[in-house]
Length: 78
Image 1: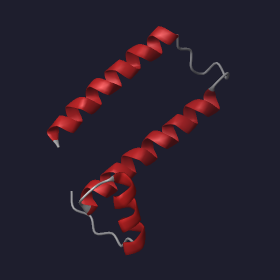
Image 2: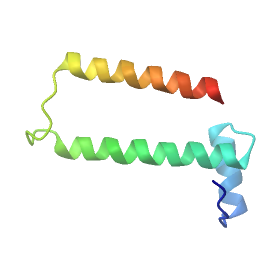
Image 3: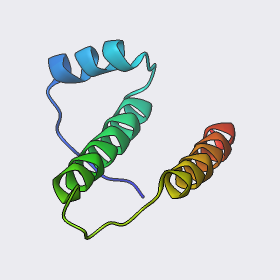
């Protein structure tokens, strides 16, 4: 999907330098992924101790393993 957005050039250049990316598209993709991960982590932290999430250490390790496998598959496609 193509989307036209206006991003300040100095912000985009700084983001590219920090991310180590070479294209604007790659930089924006990484930035959006990082935003999503960060917000989801914050939501989980807020739920800690609430009883809403009941997960054992082995459950968490299984989810991490699945996530890492997914990330590897996605990275190999790029």
